[in-house]
Image 1: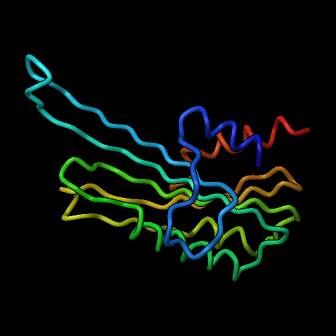
Image 2: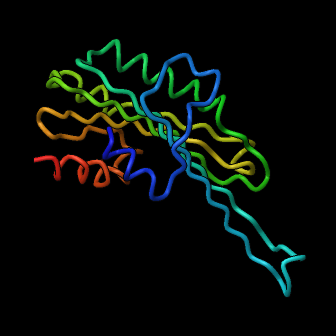
Length: 164
């Protein structure tokens, strides 16, 4: 957990969890980036795009199907609470990270890999939000993720490599 906090600290703001989430998280990190192009001076903006990521981390002794369903529901609920769509909003990612101390059952792998959730705001004019589900099996040093999580899978695999 401390290693994950240090890694998040490079690009994210590690904060207290936002109010309204029904689960007590072990770690919450927020990333915000805005890109903007000007014409002539900063008074004339041509366009602006905002990107955000909210990382919700929770550790478990054992993970079973019901816990994955609960975490998936939490992440879907977090999209409604944490995403603020507006004309300059491009993308918000809700990353749910589950740390498992004990080995995962083989039957959980397809459930994790098939989970997919994306919400589009005003036919993409106000951007979109998507959910990444990451499960880190600390006993076998394996990272399982849904299709949206594949782009950050190496980041989490790097956390597990150095622990040996």
